[in-house]
Image (cartoon, rainbow, N blue to C red; front, side, top):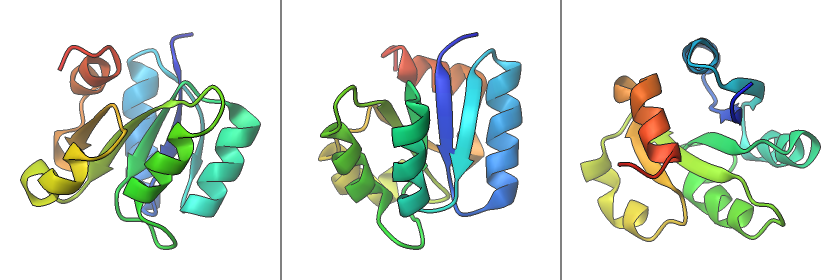
Amino acid sequence: MGLTVLVVDDHPSFRRFARRLLEQAGYGVVGDAEDGASAMAAVDALRPDVVLLDVLLPDVSGLELAETLAQEPGAPLVVLTSSRSATDLSGALADSSARGFIAKRDLTAVGFTAIVDGVS
């Protein structure tokens, strides 16, 4: 199995889509979460290599959560995602500790791998 991934998004349909896409590409999707609180619990329990993290969660900003995760021992890589474009979020993304950003509509296995591998 490749790298392990936790998918964090408040939309169940996107979580299912991302899981299928990433599993077909050889990633081990170890779980998913619908908000920041359940994401933190899942990271603690599952210790994923990568977190695919929505910027807009119901209980916390994904940008804030990315910063919190960066402080964790053995911090996972964070790839931010949103239905908004990178242009809309450019200032906040530039200041983020996340590995990268990919818009939901642009999520592909190749694009995700490029960010995770640091190729983008």
